[in-house]
Length: 386
Image (cartoon, rainbow, N blue to C red; front, side):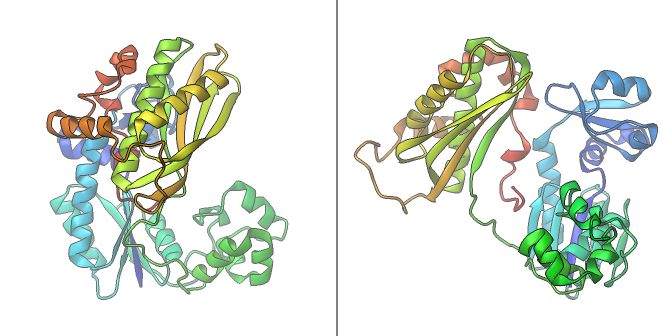
């Protein structure tokens, strides 16, 4: 049997652990710019506020709510405390995301686990236990909030097929053309038909819904296919210095992530989003590297090629063709020891993240002064989903 733990309204619940006075009050958690609601409590959802809604609209819909800026450092503290509790109950645990875990439920009392997490961490969770992880996730979702159940094959047959993780709109349209609209329809459909429509991934879901586990619990994260760092550039801007500051910042964050995972890359990509449209480009590096002295010039060159003065809203820098450090051939073009990056790491580990950073990031000093930008969900390492 496989279990799935899913925190209820995790970000809002985490804020209530820190600020108990928020209990029972509608709570909205805002993105790093404070411009939109990225998570909300059940009370705020009941008031009509939607995820992604701009703050100026949300306060009209729910003027009596409390809106707080996100804090992923705090959320990680509670997330890892939840993980510690789950590991006390089960020796096999997958840290799936910041608010979700799968575990081997053999001999586990899920109700006791749920109570212990609430007592020790302060976060309410829903737990589903079933024969496969797909069924376990359906079980936890169906029992929210603060539910706990052991479910069997067929218990969710009446749910829409889109409730299955991995079945989005496009897949549901394909299935609907064959009168497959519910979980039960999918489970009882011809397996070979499902394979033709949704490939072997869909067939895997078919097996899981029929009680045969296909996807195992992953204790350690598999190797990334790519690593990206970026996102919003704060306020939309066409200021070249600010944008170059973001290029440098995102490269430094990418180098930091690759070092943690022990990766080097052979290909770098840059994605720019404008108010209308966007641009993406990539470049092959002369050798596999994880050094900023090679990655930053490559990223700058891509930016010069792709940017033509348009206001930029988002930027991502992506490392592809990853290799584990030590598995690649050495090149005469790259220093064996990227000394600048090592110096940065040494100082920043002692004095704080970004204490030493590229001079080009001085153009976005305001971003470094805002704690919400200092730590993102991608900085929570060890999760298996991304």
